[in-house]
Image (cartoon, rainbow, N blue to C red; front, side, top):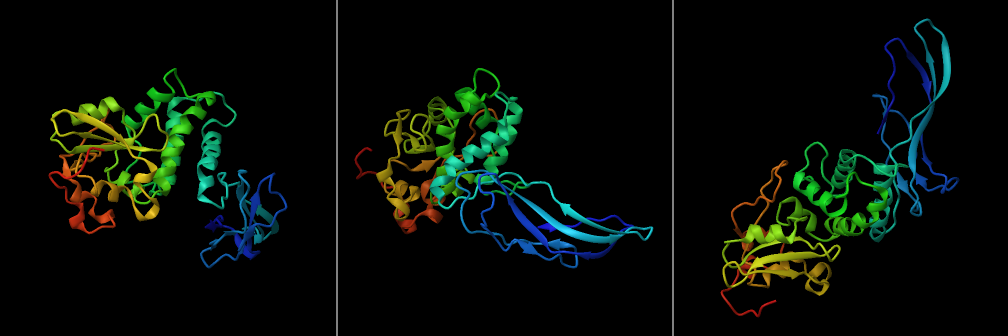
Length: 319
C-alpha cells in the first residue's frame, strides 16, 4: 500500500496514477511486474496486487514508486513535480521453494553484514530475529514463538564463540541453520509443531539428557540434529529409567506429504509422552511443561484416527 502525505496548506490539483518499478541492475529492462499502475483512492492510498511474471534469477531487487503531482501552495502558486519513493527493502522473486534456502542466505547476509567483515552480536541477533519471524510467517507485533535467549546462546556457542559474528563464519552457520529453517518453513506441520513448542528445535544432546533425567520411560523431546543438517532427532527414555536414547528421523520415516512426523510418532509405542516447551522469552536453559500424552498433542496433525495415536504397552521392536 502506498499513501500520499501532504501538508495542511497544500491543495492537490491533479495527480497521475502511481507506478511501481522494479529496481535491479541484473534484471534492468525486463518487464516482469504486472498490475504495477494504480490510482489513488479518496484516502490518497493505492493498493498494488503485484504479480511477478518471472523470477529475478537469484538477484536481489527492490521496489520504488513514482507519480507526477500538480498542487497549489498556500500562497496560490501552482507547482508541478515528480515524487519518487525510497527503495524498499531488498527481496528476491523465486519460482520454486527449493530456491528459498539459497536466496534467504543472500538476503540475510546482506541485511546483517552489508560490506562489513564483522558486526556486533546484538545487531546480528536483531537481524536474524526479523528474518526468522518472516520465514516462519508470524505476526511481527504478536509472534507466537520467537527465537529466545537460549536459542541465541546456543547459536553463539556453536558458531560464533570467538567473539562478534564475522562473515567468514556465516557460511558454516547457514549450512546448518538454513536447512533447519527450510524444514520449519516448508515441511508439513513442522512450523505449527515448532510454534506450539512440540518441537523444541535448537538444543544440545547434553541438555536433552538433563531434561529427560528421572522421567518415565517413553518420555521424549524433538529437536534438530546438531550433526545432520536439517534433520530432526528424538531423545527419549527407554524401557529402563534414565536409559536415554537418541534416534535420528530419516527421510523414509516420513514418506512425503502422505506420512508426516505426527504419523511416524503415532506408529511407535516407544514414544508415549512429549516434553512440550514452556514459553518464556528470557530463560537461559530449556524449560518444559509436565509430560503430555502424544495422543493429545499430535491428534490434530495426524492423518490417522485419534485411536491410532494411542500407545501400546508392547508389540514393537526397538528403533
